[in-house]
Length: 312
Ligand code: AKB
Image (tube, rainbow, N blue to C red; front, side):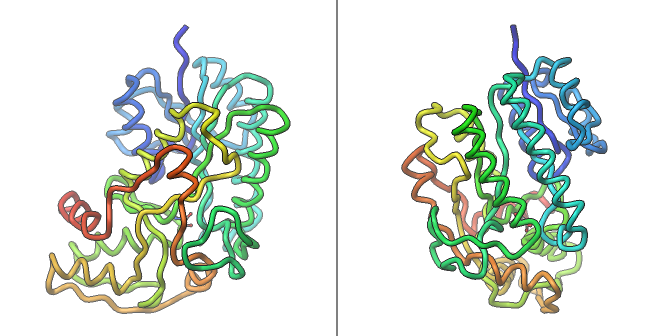
């Protein structure tokens, strides 16, 4: 019997690209996209789609049974900036959606889960440079608290009930197919759009705020590599650190200027500055390198080239 894959939050920044990649790999009919609202035309036309509120266990259980789902990628979440505005809604979405898929796996209705964590699990007391896999965390944002709690629950369900759950602490993700929404690292996508449309961008972080970032192609490849590896190789069942590059708004602006000489950046930091200041500057991902041979391919220059080429 053919076992299918369900993507929850398939219309978001990561979900859209994950859906296309998994459909190209396994076939359109094998990968069921779902979200609380419909996505762009290309996604909707590419295969089966279900409207789904990720916090509704009964609806999720029904879809899993109907489509004979074996593997779930839970990409629905409220990101850092929006979560600061709606703390209870963020906690409800981020935690209940995770419990729903963990409990389905505990009841053996699905056999494998991918759940994204984030660099937001780290906080102001974390060593900021080359942040290790295991270190002080103490997140100071609603989103970070939900992701750190989620990590603890993933590890618990793995140890206690044998649930095969796998996770990555994504840095800020840069992509051109779908806009991010509600994150602190979103500036690193907006800046490319504005560079092309206006040759100018006003950044909500200050010039020298260094944050870990990654081009979407690397993030999707990492996700698939983690999911395809043998279970015994996956030693970390909370979530893996993952790194590609780190840069500041000033540095990304400089890299854009090399292609669009008239581009100018200005700075008007808002409440998101405090969120960014609480996160690491750079990440040590040696555990992912050792356990499943992770290696990033894109740096700032190749990311800028890809973004400008595709957005133009
Ligand atoms: C955000 O900025 O909230 C996200 C993240 C780093 O998890 N992109």
